[in-house]
Length: 372
Image (cartoon, rainbow, N blue to C red; front, side, top):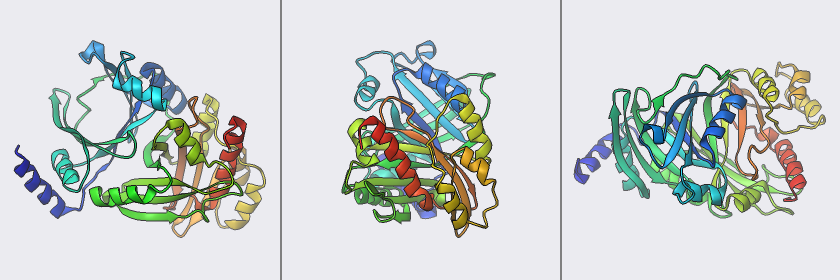
């Protein structure tokens, strides 16, 4: 297909929708040991290992595992050699999210339109087709060393030899709710404009440093959404405070902008968290004082407040309903990426009423590390 054909296809694509998206695709982690990371995600979060590619399947330079829990898909990838792009990435950043995939109906048209809108190419469209399925995938660059693959896939992912997982036990996690980026001071609006221009995203929420602050630290955040609301990407930058914020700590240790956390949704957060705690994952500590204030602030929210407190779950309410959420402590040696777990009972927000309690909890952990 010629460049002219692609441009025409992209314009036809855009005439139907500013930038059609079907949802999040696989999120790919680059790690030091793919096998052990896959085992940890299976044991701790209940994701099934459903595919493998590596030297045994004809891919000589890396090993990758495909994991799934309902709509959540993770790929964990490690290099076979220390002198490799993946190894260098892990050496610089530690284990982290390299690729936030975006599922689209037409990957070649999406790639052409993204480039026409000013995106920087990373990998041109590639068609992968075999007896297992068909995929078209193309990749553009985003903040730091993060990329977005635009993925059109029919059937199972043809890149992976299928595996049957009889070991994984679900924790009830079923979808990626949102993915949060940390960028440098003064860069938030630049990346907001990037998502507006390249993907026709719109700004859903804006939180300034008055809304997201404690006595010591602050940050600013803008929530971008696209694909009719199926993709939500909050973008954070640090704000001036008395001490080092969680965003500055992340940037210091990740050595670049990148993904701070993924929010994974469940229909029953209390059961999910009780299960996950039993598997050994620690979530943030919420002090007792939070709960009487929260119950007074949200008297019409019908939940078992004692159980919510026992599980250190945060609660927030907006015009559309309420939500339950909590956050893991760090899951690797560096204080970089972590998970949020969220249950939405109508609410469309991001827990604004919980920001102060959340930040104070994060600051307590920073202080223990000597990084506040």
